Length: 66
Image (cartoon, rainbow, N blue to C red):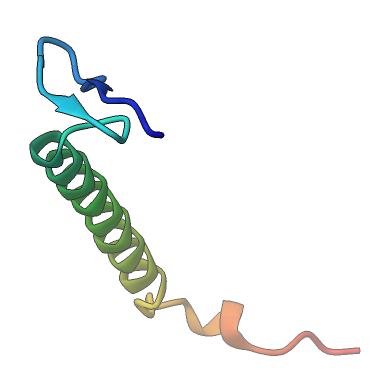
């Protein structure tokens, strides 16, 4: 039979069957989701910066002659 134990979140005295109580489980999930969203936004910004076409001198654009 499962035993209740204290929430693993520092300072929380709520008894639970899992590692964290419901309140702290939701808090941890929200933090992880915001970190994930921040990483996706950063990646999108980096991708957008790389897709910018920069002007190049005409001599540099010409194909090398063999």
